[in-house]
Length: 146
Image 1 (cartoon, rainbow, N blue to C red):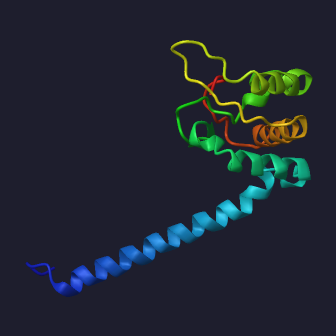
Image 2 (image 1 turned 180 degrees about the vertical axis):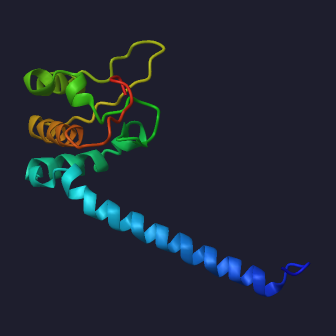
Image 3 (image 1 turned 90 degrees about the vertical axis):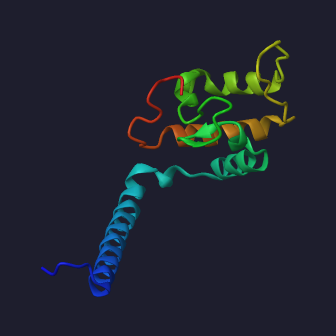
C-alpha cells in the first residue's frame, strides 16, 4: 500500500460506494414492491374508499393529522382510529357524530374545523380510515392512542 492517498484511489472508493448503495437501493425497492400486495390488501379497495381518500386530500387532513406515521403532529394519528373508536360496531356512528359536532369550542383546546360534509362524504371518509386501519403496518402506531 502506498504512503499517500491518490486521486485514483478516491475515484475508486467513490464509484465503488456509489454502485454498492445503488444496488442496495434497487434491492430494497424490489423487496418493497414484492411485499406491498400482501400488506395493503388492495383487493379491498372500493369506490367509497377512493372517494374517502380524495376527501382526505381535498380537506388537507394530513395538514394536522398523521396517517400511518406520515403528516403533521398537531392532531392525533388516525391509522388505528377505526379500532380505537368502536370498530365494526360503533366507528361510523362515533365518527359521524364527532365530525358533525366540530368545532367543540372548549377553551384551551385545539379546534378541529367543521368541514360541513354530508352523510355520504362522512361514510366515504370512514371507509377510507377503516381501509387504512386494516393494513399490515407492523403494529404502527406503537400505542393504541396513536
